[in-house]
Length: 284
Picture (cartoon, rainbow, N blue to C red):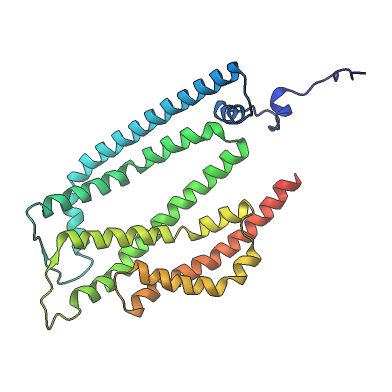
């Protein structure tokens, strides 16, 4: 005997497992419908149309980001030489040379493009966020808007640390080592590449607490496991210091390793906070 339908059936969004007042986005609905087994012809048409729509949106947002980079590169071209002068100021007594016909032009364009990406970063982040936000729940959107500024700020702090603290002693050691035997004539392309690479990777390394918090928030790691692997983290910090820094002296490696160890310890504190937040969310 068939049971009668309930007097007050749940709305479709709640029946599908979404919070009250939050209906599924077209992107999430397409992902769920498209992943079903043996869809009907109508479902296939809807899924295909949704996929085409999102691909067109992705293309449009990539084009907008590239236009922003192009505009930023044009603006960066006017600042390339002052920035190069600023990079030279990181070490005293450096004499830059060029050994190829196109080396100065290539370096000039490289600095312009890097500045263009920096100038266009707000537009790039905005386009990326606006593409993924429709597929997120309200809680996921809130989590994204909290963590994104933290990630950007961590990278900027790491880049500033590399530029103002790490670069002067590292470059001084590299430029003046053995100068009583060989006169240092540094290629401008190599000089800019070393600086940009070091600043970028130190900025990435400073993302460690954010990554740890995210992993703990989704349950991939626990504070207890992080504490148990602390000794390996210390060794890894010195290994990263040896890889990131362009020198082989222990002083510059220590300048990188000590902040990484401190960031790991800060990540453990954030992991404890993330675990409490996760437990609270699961019990709600």
